[in-house]
Amino acid sequence: MRHLDVVTADVDVRLGARLSALRAEHGWSLDELAERSGISRSTLSRAERAETSPTASLLNRLCAVYGRTMSQLLSEVEAEPAPVVRAADQTVWEDRAAGFVRRSVSPPHAGLRGELIEGRLAPGADLAYDRPPVPGLEQHIWVLEGELEVTVQGVAHALGAGDCLRLRVWGPTRFRCGGDRPVRYVLAVVLP
Image 1: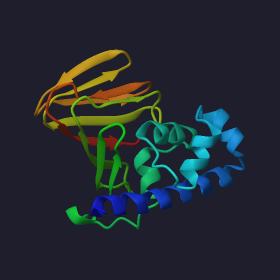
Image 2 (image 1 turned 180 degrees about the vertical axis):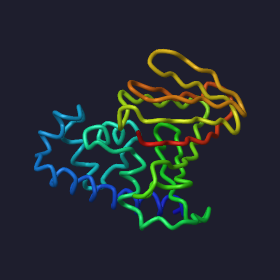
Image 3 (image 1 turned 60 degrees about the vertical axis):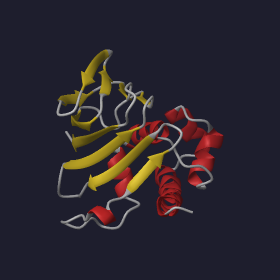
C-alpha cells in the first residue's frame, strides 16, 4: 500500500468520526441531515463509518449545512497547525473518482482568516460545487501549470499558467481541466 493511501485512509477515519460528531452536536438524525444536505442517508452513513472516502462535492454540501469551509472541516481532523508547515507535514486529500488532489499548504488557523491550498486536477477532471461552503467566501485562483476553466455563476473563465482569478463565491462553481495535461493551481481562501 502506498504511503498516500495510508494517509488518506487515516484522514477518512478521522473525517468520518468528525462528521458523525457534527451531526450529533446539531441533534440531527441521518434522515434530517439527508434532507438538509440533499445527500442520501446511506451515503452519509457510509462516510461517517469511513466505509467510503467522501467526494469533494459531498464534503462541500456538508460544509454548507454546517457553515464552514472544507478546509475548516479538514483542519478539525488534523493536529493543531504550526506556524511553519513543512511540505512533508501538509495534509493531502484525494478524490480519486474525480481526479482531484488537494494539499493543505497553509491550513486554517483560529486566529487567521486566510489559507492556501494546492489543487491538482487530472486531464478531463470536472468538479462542480452546487453552493459555496460559506456565502461570500473570497477566493484567488492562481494557475501554476496547465489550463483550468473555472465557471462562476454561469460565466466561464479560461486560465493558463500564471493567470489569477479573484472572486467572491455566492453560488455554484465548477473547476475543469479540459487540456491534455494535468493542471496545478494555488487556491487562496479568505473568510468573509
